[in-house]
Image (tube, rainbow, N blue to C red; front, side):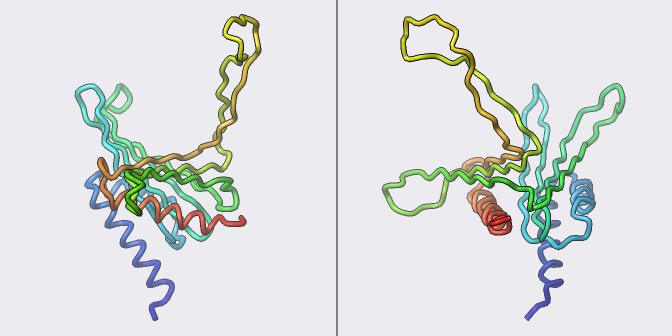
Length: 195
């Protein structure tokens, strides 16, 4: 039976390979992820490469989510055109590590087409994780049932704490990407159960 360190080395190697497959500055991304993981065991991971079109240029963004025995780590790398401070094109990498005991919610939404035809793979999946790091209040004017009423009813709203949200679709990202996100969500849910 392989040792735990062999399994960890295999997952760490698989994480590196997944980053390299994106072709998006792999050395920069691997360096940022390694610094954030800081030698901890890699339990599970998810890599999402998302190119966006900005005016007449393609800008790329990669998100790497890593689950360790004690933390949820997310690393984001973006590319930028040169500006007045850095005239050459550059990347920026930011990372955040959250103690698993701080994770308050793991919300998974699966969109399945033709559900009446029996079980099938989800066409899209959304993973939303909240730990209270970012909160926002969305307010809107309150109203009553009377369409003729012009009284001021104050405001209504909701407090939102979705610190991290990622949506993938089989059409844009491939069915493996959807299954990978769901597998990562399952791992995270199992690790935060009762935390």
